Length: 288
Image (cartoon, rainbow, N blue to C red; front, side):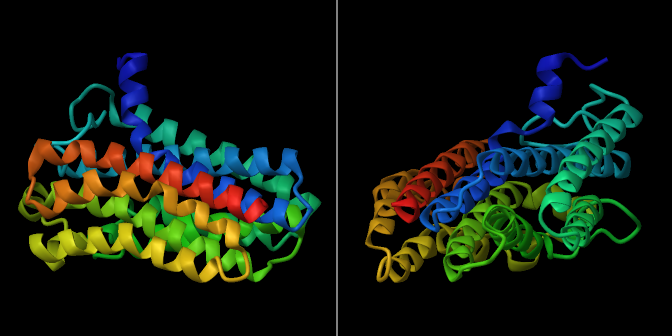
Protein backbone atom coordinates (compact mmCIF):
# COMPACT_ATOMS: atom_id res chain seq x y z
CA UNK A 1 0.00 0.00 0.00
CA UNK A 2 1.31 3.42 -0.93
CA UNK A 3 1.58 5.99 1.86
CA UNK A 4 -0.31 9.28 1.79
CA UNK A 5 2.88 11.15 0.92
CA UNK A 6 3.46 8.79 -2.01
CA UNK A 7 -0.08 9.40 -3.29
CA UNK A 8 0.53 13.14 -3.04
CA UNK A 9 3.83 12.78 -4.88
CA UNK A 10 2.10 10.62 -7.49
CA UNK A 11 -0.39 13.42 -8.16
CA UNK A 12 2.63 15.49 -9.30
CA UNK A 13 1.93 18.66 -7.32
CA UNK A 14 4.49 20.67 -9.32
CA UNK A 15 2.24 20.37 -12.37
CA UNK A 16 -0.93 21.55 -10.62
CA UNK A 17 -0.46 25.27 -11.38
CA UNK A 18 -1.25 24.32 -14.98
CA UNK A 19 -4.84 23.63 -13.92
CA UNK A 20 -5.43 26.46 -11.45
CA UNK A 21 -3.77 29.37 -13.24
CA UNK A 22 -6.17 29.29 -16.24
CA UNK A 23 -9.12 29.58 -13.84
CA UNK A 24 -7.50 32.54 -12.08
CA UNK A 25 -6.85 34.26 -15.40
CA UNK A 26 -10.35 33.54 -16.68
CA UNK A 27 -11.79 34.98 -13.47
CA UNK A 28 -9.62 38.08 -13.98
CA UNK A 29 -11.23 38.52 -17.39
CA UNK A 30 -14.69 38.07 -15.84
CA UNK A 31 -13.87 40.70 -13.20
CA UNK A 32 -12.81 43.08 -15.94
CA UNK A 33 -16.21 42.51 -17.54
CA UNK A 34 -17.87 43.22 -14.19
CA UNK A 35 -19.54 39.80 -14.14
CA UNK A 36 -17.46 37.53 -11.90
CA UNK A 37 -19.47 34.80 -10.16
CA UNK A 38 -17.28 33.42 -7.39
CA UNK A 39 -19.02 30.13 -6.71
CA UNK A 40 -18.82 29.29 -10.42
CA UNK A 41 -15.13 30.24 -10.45
CA UNK A 42 -14.48 27.93 -7.48
CA UNK A 43 -16.38 25.11 -9.14
CA UNK A 44 -14.39 25.64 -12.35
CA UNK A 45 -11.19 25.44 -10.29
CA UNK A 46 -12.36 22.16 -8.78
CA UNK A 47 -13.09 20.74 -12.24
CA UNK A 48 -9.67 21.79 -13.54
CA UNK A 49 -7.81 20.43 -10.52
CA UNK A 50 -9.69 17.11 -10.55
CA UNK A 51 -8.96 16.67 -14.26
CA UNK A 52 -5.26 17.49 -13.76
CA UNK A 53 -4.83 15.01 -10.91
CA UNK A 54 -6.88 12.47 -12.85
CA UNK A 55 -4.70 12.73 -15.94
CA UNK A 56 -1.58 12.44 -13.77
CA UNK A 57 -2.82 9.22 -12.16
CA UNK A 58 -4.07 7.97 -15.53
CA UNK A 59 -0.66 8.64 -17.04
CA UNK A 60 0.98 6.86 -14.10
CA UNK A 61 -1.28 3.83 -14.59
CA UNK A 62 -0.97 3.58 -18.39
CA UNK A 63 2.79 4.09 -18.51
CA UNK A 64 3.24 1.76 -15.55
CA UNK A 65 1.38 -1.19 -17.05
CA UNK A 66 3.27 -0.69 -20.33
CA UNK A 67 6.59 -0.77 -18.48
CA UNK A 68 7.72 2.64 -19.74
CA UNK A 69 8.19 3.98 -16.18
CA UNK A 70 10.52 1.28 -14.87
CA UNK A 71 13.67 3.41 -15.28
CA UNK A 72 12.66 6.97 -14.45
CA UNK A 73 14.76 9.92 -13.44
CA UNK A 74 11.88 12.17 -12.43
CA UNK A 75 9.39 12.21 -9.55
CA UNK A 76 7.78 9.09 -8.12
CA UNK A 77 5.47 7.02 -10.28
CA UNK A 78 3.21 4.81 -8.20
CA UNK A 79 2.82 1.89 -10.61
CA UNK A 80 6.31 2.00 -12.11
CA UNK A 81 7.92 2.00 -8.65
CA UNK A 82 5.45 -0.66 -7.45
CA UNK A 83 4.43 1.61 -4.57
CA UNK A 84 0.76 0.97 -5.45
CA UNK A 85 -0.95 -1.72 -7.53
CA UNK A 86 -2.22 -0.65 -10.96
CA UNK A 87 -5.87 -1.17 -10.02
CA UNK A 88 -5.68 1.34 -7.17
CA UNK A 89 -4.06 4.00 -9.37
CA UNK A 90 -6.63 3.41 -12.10
CA UNK A 91 -9.39 3.73 -9.52
CA UNK A 92 -7.93 7.04 -8.30
CA UNK A 93 -7.83 8.36 -11.87
CA UNK A 94 -11.41 7.35 -12.59
CA UNK A 95 -12.55 8.81 -9.28
CA UNK A 96 -11.00 12.16 -10.18
CA UNK A 97 -12.64 12.10 -13.62
CA UNK A 98 -16.01 11.32 -12.02
CA UNK A 99 -15.65 14.18 -9.55
CA UNK A 100 -14.79 16.57 -12.38
CA UNK A 101 -17.79 15.33 -14.38
CA UNK A 102 -20.23 15.90 -11.51
CA UNK A 103 -18.95 19.43 -10.87
CA UNK A 104 -18.99 20.14 -14.60
CA UNK A 105 -22.58 18.95 -14.79
CA UNK A 106 -23.57 21.61 -12.25
CA UNK A 107 -21.86 24.33 -14.31
CA UNK A 108 -23.54 23.10 -17.48
CA UNK A 109 -26.94 23.10 -15.76
CA UNK A 110 -26.67 26.78 -14.84
CA UNK A 111 -25.11 27.96 -18.12
CA UNK A 112 -25.33 25.84 -21.25
CA UNK A 113 -25.64 22.11 -21.87
CA UNK A 114 -23.11 22.18 -24.71
CA UNK A 115 -20.47 22.40 -21.99
CA UNK A 116 -21.10 18.70 -21.38
CA UNK A 117 -19.56 17.94 -24.79
CA UNK A 118 -16.50 20.03 -23.90
CA UNK A 119 -16.17 18.23 -20.59
CA UNK A 120 -16.49 14.81 -22.24
CA UNK A 121 -13.76 15.74 -24.73
CA UNK A 122 -11.52 16.87 -21.87
CA UNK A 123 -11.93 13.55 -20.04
CA UNK A 124 -11.33 11.56 -23.23
CA UNK A 125 -8.22 13.63 -23.95
CA UNK A 126 -6.99 13.01 -20.42
CA UNK A 127 -7.41 9.25 -20.72
CA UNK A 128 -6.09 8.73 -24.24
CA UNK A 129 -2.98 10.85 -23.62
CA UNK A 130 -1.25 7.64 -22.56
CA UNK A 131 -4.22 5.26 -22.36
CA UNK A 132 -5.75 2.99 -24.98
CA UNK A 133 -4.04 1.09 -27.78
CA UNK A 134 -2.77 4.19 -29.61
CA UNK A 135 -2.13 6.95 -27.07
CA UNK A 136 -1.59 10.30 -28.76
CA UNK A 137 0.99 11.28 -26.14
CA UNK A 138 3.24 8.65 -27.72
CA UNK A 139 2.77 10.33 -31.10
CA UNK A 140 4.14 13.80 -30.36
CA UNK A 141 0.69 15.35 -29.80
CA UNK A 142 0.86 15.92 -26.06
CA UNK A 143 1.82 19.59 -26.31
CA UNK A 144 -1.06 20.27 -28.70
CA UNK A 145 -3.53 18.79 -26.23
CA UNK A 146 -2.05 20.73 -23.30
CA UNK A 147 -2.25 24.00 -25.23
CA UNK A 148 -5.88 23.36 -26.18
CA UNK A 149 -7.21 22.08 -22.84
CA UNK A 150 -4.98 23.88 -20.30
CA UNK A 151 -4.93 27.09 -22.32
CA UNK A 152 -7.84 27.72 -24.64
CA UNK A 153 -10.53 25.52 -23.07
CA UNK A 154 -9.65 26.23 -19.44
CA UNK A 155 -9.40 30.02 -19.70
CA UNK A 156 -12.25 30.55 -22.17
CA UNK A 157 -14.44 28.04 -20.33
CA UNK A 158 -13.87 29.79 -17.00
CA UNK A 159 -14.84 33.10 -18.57
CA UNK A 160 -17.93 31.62 -20.20
CA UNK A 161 -19.40 30.02 -17.08
CA UNK A 162 -19.26 33.42 -15.33
CA UNK A 163 -19.93 35.92 -18.11
CA UNK A 164 -22.03 33.59 -20.29
CA UNK A 165 -20.22 35.06 -23.28
CA UNK A 166 -16.70 35.04 -24.70
CA UNK A 167 -15.00 38.45 -25.00
CA UNK A 168 -11.84 38.68 -27.09
CA UNK A 169 -9.75 39.10 -23.92
CA UNK A 170 -10.54 35.49 -23.03
CA UNK A 171 -8.84 34.20 -26.18
CA UNK A 172 -5.93 36.63 -25.89
CA UNK A 173 -5.26 35.56 -22.29
CA UNK A 174 -5.65 31.86 -23.08
CA UNK A 175 -2.74 31.74 -25.55
CA UNK A 176 0.13 32.71 -23.18
CA UNK A 177 -1.33 30.54 -20.42
CA UNK A 178 -1.43 27.60 -22.84
CA UNK A 179 2.19 28.23 -23.81
CA UNK A 180 3.35 28.19 -20.19
CA UNK A 181 1.43 24.96 -19.61
CA UNK A 182 3.23 23.51 -22.64
CA UNK A 183 6.55 24.60 -21.13
CA UNK A 184 5.87 22.28 -18.17
CA UNK A 185 5.34 19.31 -20.47
CA UNK A 186 8.30 20.19 -22.68
CA UNK A 187 10.60 20.33 -19.64
CA UNK A 188 9.27 16.99 -18.39
CA UNK A 189 9.70 15.30 -21.78
CA UNK A 190 13.15 16.83 -22.31
CA UNK A 191 14.31 15.15 -19.12
CA UNK A 192 12.81 11.83 -20.21
CA UNK A 193 14.18 11.71 -23.78
CA UNK A 194 16.65 8.84 -23.10
CA UNK A 195 14.14 6.58 -21.32
CA UNK A 196 11.29 7.47 -23.69
CA UNK A 197 13.44 6.62 -26.72
CA UNK A 198 14.40 3.30 -25.15
CA UNK A 199 10.77 2.39 -24.47
CA UNK A 200 9.48 3.49 -27.89
CA UNK A 201 7.56 6.49 -26.51
CA UNK A 202 7.75 9.11 -29.28
CA UNK A 203 7.00 12.35 -27.48
CA UNK A 204 7.51 15.67 -29.27
CA UNK A 205 10.84 15.95 -27.46
CA UNK A 206 11.96 12.61 -28.89
CA UNK A 207 10.88 13.67 -32.38
CA UNK A 208 12.54 17.11 -32.20
CA UNK A 209 15.69 15.96 -30.48
CA UNK A 210 17.53 17.48 -27.54
CA UNK A 211 18.62 20.85 -29.00
CA UNK A 212 15.34 21.82 -30.65
CA UNK A 213 13.37 20.76 -27.57
CA UNK A 214 15.44 23.16 -25.47
CA UNK A 215 14.71 25.97 -27.94
CA UNK A 216 11.01 25.08 -27.83
CA UNK A 217 11.03 25.43 -24.05
CA UNK A 218 12.67 28.85 -24.32
CA UNK A 219 10.04 29.93 -26.86
CA UNK A 220 7.19 28.77 -24.61
CA UNK A 221 8.51 30.90 -21.73
CA UNK A 222 9.38 33.96 -23.84
CA UNK A 223 6.38 34.32 -26.17
CA UNK A 224 3.88 35.06 -23.37
CA UNK A 225 5.70 38.35 -22.75
CA UNK A 226 5.39 39.35 -26.39
CA UNK A 227 1.67 38.55 -26.34
CA UNK A 228 1.05 40.58 -23.19
CA UNK A 229 2.44 43.66 -24.95
CA UNK A 230 -0.32 43.33 -27.54
CA UNK A 231 -2.98 42.79 -24.87
CA UNK A 232 -1.71 45.89 -23.05
CA UNK A 233 -2.69 48.19 -25.92
CA UNK A 234 -6.34 48.32 -24.79
CA UNK A 235 -5.57 47.05 -21.25
CA UNK A 236 -2.41 48.82 -19.97
CA UNK A 237 -2.63 47.15 -16.55
CA UNK A 238 -1.88 43.82 -18.27
CA UNK A 239 1.76 44.99 -18.30
CA UNK A 240 1.87 43.88 -14.67
CA UNK A 241 2.59 40.41 -16.06
CA UNK A 242 6.03 41.66 -17.10
CA UNK A 243 7.02 41.73 -13.43
CA UNK A 244 7.17 37.93 -13.56
CA UNK A 245 9.87 37.94 -16.26
CA UNK A 246 12.80 37.46 -13.83
CA UNK A 247 11.28 34.13 -12.77
CA UNK A 248 11.62 32.86 -16.34
CA UNK A 249 15.41 33.28 -16.35
CA UNK A 250 16.63 30.50 -13.97
CA UNK A 251 14.66 27.59 -15.53
CA UNK A 252 15.33 28.81 -19.07
CA UNK A 253 19.04 29.16 -18.32
CA UNK A 254 19.11 25.65 -16.85
CA UNK A 255 17.48 24.25 -19.99
CA UNK A 256 19.59 26.20 -22.49
CA UNK A 257 22.90 25.39 -20.76
CA UNK A 258 22.39 21.68 -21.39
CA UNK A 259 21.25 20.31 -18.02
CA UNK A 260 20.13 16.68 -18.20
CA UNK A 261 18.51 14.05 -15.99
CA UNK A 262 18.01 15.01 -12.33
CA UNK A 263 19.38 18.51 -13.01
CA UNK A 264 16.19 19.22 -14.98
CA UNK A 265 13.81 18.30 -12.16
CA UNK A 266 13.95 21.81 -10.56
CA UNK A 267 12.91 23.25 -13.92
CA UNK A 268 9.41 21.88 -13.34
CA UNK A 269 9.11 23.75 -10.05
CA UNK A 270 10.57 26.90 -11.57
CA UNK A 271 8.17 26.75 -14.50
CA UNK A 272 5.24 26.23 -12.15
CA UNK A 273 6.24 29.30 -10.13
CA UNK A 274 6.61 31.29 -13.33
CA UNK A 275 3.15 30.27 -14.47
CA UNK A 276 1.64 31.18 -11.10
CA UNK A 277 3.28 34.60 -11.07
CA UNK A 278 2.54 35.42 -14.71
CA UNK A 279 -1.05 34.20 -14.46
CA UNK A 280 -1.75 35.98 -11.19
CA UNK A 281 -0.34 39.29 -12.43
CA UNK A 282 -2.11 39.00 -15.80
CA UNK A 283 -5.40 38.23 -14.02
CA UNK A 284 -4.93 41.28 -11.80
CA UNK A 285 -4.14 43.48 -14.80
CA UNK A 286 -7.19 42.30 -16.75
CA UNK A 287 -9.41 42.74 -13.70
CA UNK A 288 -8.21 46.33 -13.25
